[in-house]
Image (cartoon, rainbow over all chains, first blue to last red; front, side, top):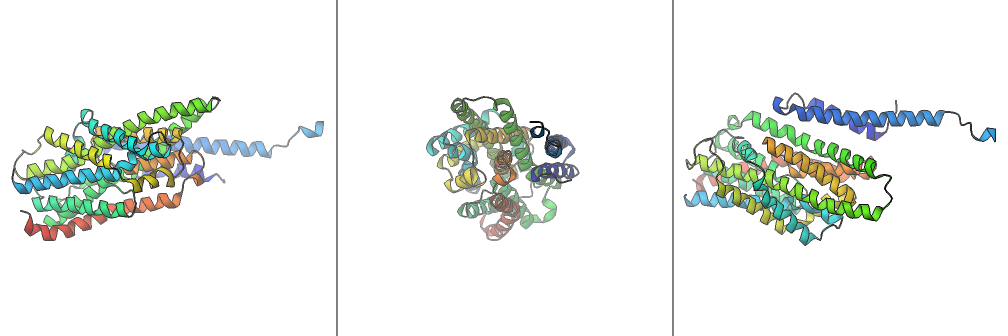
Length: 67
Length: 330
């Protein structure tokens, strides 16, 4: 699946936040979790937008042949 | 108070002054680069809120800093060497125009001096662990919040056609966001110096272990950082304000609001973070809303390298500084 660099950037952010969970003191883990959730949300939104846009491009265009 | 202690307090306040001087750029780079304020107005604005921060934040960050080394381990010479190491590192990076973190320079300096004084076991691992985690987390929080704020603003206003009126609104908004960021900067960074002075007063028996920070320490630390900001650090303004990504008033407002939100949160939680890391991350986050290539990753990478080198650099400088001071400062 080829996604844009921006999508992968947000997925990488999610991964970093989750990797840092172990060394983060328990009291502050909510920071990692909320940031991981936020970046995952952006990753999913960008990925969905790109996949839907690609599907739209691949669909045959019916407009001109009917005129 | 002996002359030695007074001298070290003076050096600590000088470090605070340099912190304001070095980090002034973080507070004002975006308002200056978007021409909301002239450089002179911007530094006065930031300095005022740096000082006013003492009214809002407690001293939890100061407590964390005073506990990074086991209480009673650092001697006067050690604290002096830690400050000298951190100041030297700040000066070197200022000459090179790198927006490194004065806070991490101080943490590195304290570690270097403590290890030189009594070995590695003097360092409190849990405090350093917290600081190291937030070295990485704070720019990420800046990036994600700034990106989210910026996207939210786009969504809210994308149908609004009166661009001039909108820009005027964002310019006014930037005054508020710059003030919020400067409050956070004053709150988090001035407390680091308070932590050092607190450790010094406890080490010399002038305060009991676990004492609160005296009011004169709070006021003098905030005054020193505000004065430092007033004198400003123009070389770094350029890197922060325009080299990482080009900013519009809306971007400046979102970057500062994101950084302010992050810094206020960690300051209230007592975590010493780098205001530099956070605002640099927020500027990257704003650039990312255009496209990844809008961020000049070469410059951002250079900044990251400066961050990585700060703690070891200040550690070595403080460790070396301790050797001659061991005999001189008692």
